[in-house]
Length: 422
Ligand SMILES: [Zn+2]
Image (cartoon, rainbow, N blue to C red; front, side, top):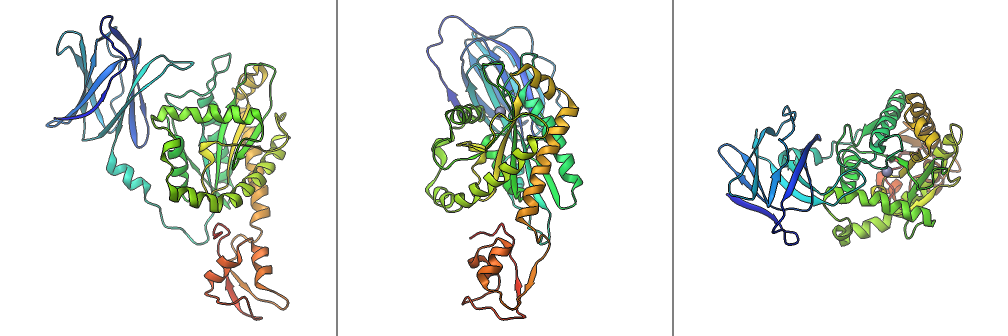
């Protein structure tokens, strides 16, 4: 028996905590269980073998009503039981289909839920396998990672008619995927495919493991003033946000990651910082260009909240070498726009506009997509060729084992992908 975790909160003696409900979210790499509590609870978690199970003891807690019916068709859970091993302790037993790595933390109340206890069940071997990068194909399509914001325990912003941002983002993202996949030069990968939460860090990691060239995060905005409306597009800022509103929004979107149970700030190591600085300038300028293309298309299907691409410190945009955008499609807090966001026809229009923006960007950035070799002509110089293909001279030299800067007429040069910016 291994003691894995002990979380204590303020003195809990006396009145008892009631466990009011239990929700289950099934993600491809983990299962999340969320217990709704009347207030904070102190808990202990144990794993047991033969057969594999997880035991969670909640001190000073009692179940109000029974546990709800859950779907145990997923890979980890066989069933859930409860009991009272000693007076005042509620014991929850998770019967497992196989050994898993549990992780547990508590969540404070938000707009939709009160105090919660979260238990995540991970299959470590599977997670490791998923992190391995597939080999890069040579003449491949432009890969666009589409990130549907929020999900699972994190509903995102809420509309007055009960519309949840997490549902809108997934619907728009799915529509965008359909448009992109119809384009023979492009391929879309979805960061989130169902109703579950993915941490902001994990979102960029999934995009990178899929060899994404571009990253587009889909959201719907909310503001206390109901009349505020329109789409906006954000790129990452190096320091500070370009406006007060941008800073406010970035705080709000980044706060979602408390749902993942980890703080973003304490994890950045030195190497990551150095690499980040090196390639970030170029990536941000590409992101701004892409953002302008997307904005000019969004303008044709609805009003714009901001006419220029805003910049803020969104955690989800921090891939150092993948141009990344966050699109706030409309204001879910605006009654007219909430109604539009609920309509599949309108969501298709938004998705089509985002797709056309990406296509514009692609046409300008990769005019020679598919061309892998260049034959040097009279009057060419290495710097001109580099400029034409939007690659660095260093990358061009490295791809062709060149020592100097001189090229001769008729020489065949391999053109590295423009993603190789070093
Ligand atoms: Zn959002």
